[in-house]
Image 1 (cartoon, rainbow, N blue to C red):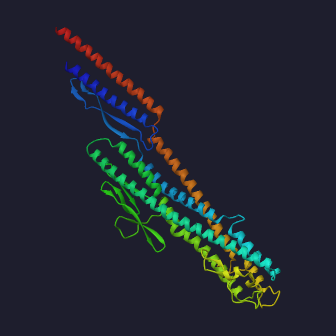
Image 2: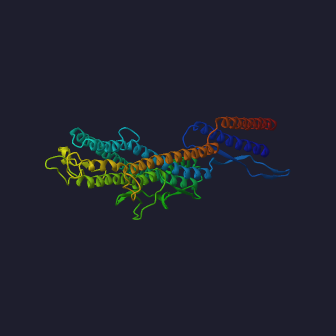
Image 3: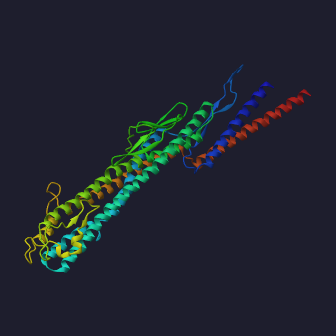
Length: 456
């Protein structure tokens, strides 16, 4: 009887183990399309053998552990590549908006309006006494002013939008770190109690995936299954709680702070890093160069114009052609708009003289910027070229990094992803093992009946 009991217990352990394996396989199939889900596996272990007169005899099987299939090295590589991709993607989006604001090359771009502006003065030099030529100068100047204003206004708006986006991303980041911390507590508790936290770990790692695209993270694992997630050297998520990131303005720049710290947290990558670099460095540089071009135009033309004479009676002199000092406030002097006869084309006030108009027209080809090495149109075209190169660089980086991320995700999928074919194979294996164990139980039951009948 003791022998039959041992056989029955072995069969019983097989039924329990194979049933659990069937349940895990069923769960894998059910979550084959669930984002972030990692395939789970039951680890079987032979029960301790017992000594008999014939040697050691096995006592069945036990389902020792349910664990998820995950390669932590691949996870770390994905998180490392995601932040670079996030930064390039954010910058590409922003630079595309800047490119649209500059609108080059086009008939309405600043480059073309500059050409038309200087051409208007060239036309004035040919007909300095004609009111139509003077009206054309006013008209082309107003179009030029509108171009400067439009580009600078669009860049200013883009920068404001970036600031809003930074706040939105901080909200997302803080929610993610809070969720990661809450999950870490549950994971640590489950691990301590000997429970399988696989589903919780999947949820947490999926959130870290999202977080790594927003900001560069460093993730370190603890023995209890929890993690510590750091940003810029500061732990922002752990089972001890989350530390919120906030922003502050220092001069003309946005800085990021962790918790109550007064020292800025360095955020140089991820979508947040891309936004910060664009807001703090890239856009101000472009706007500064646009201001420099406008200021050079204002200064150079006012110097020439104020020394010349109009055709009114007596000839007016000492009038600035432009007002303002930058791209945002450049404007044609209202005095000139109201009375185009005050446009100074003459250098000495004599009738028909065109020295000033020619000098202003020639300014198009005069090197007055970058230490006297670059003309105003060349300086502006260099800015346009810089923007175009930056867009190309961000697009290339984004494409390359996305390719790397995709390759790593494919590697992770080969380890953690659910293969329906493989699960069906396992399902058949566990089914047959279960049926075989059931047959053992049936046979043992028949043997018990035979023994009972013999006793009777």
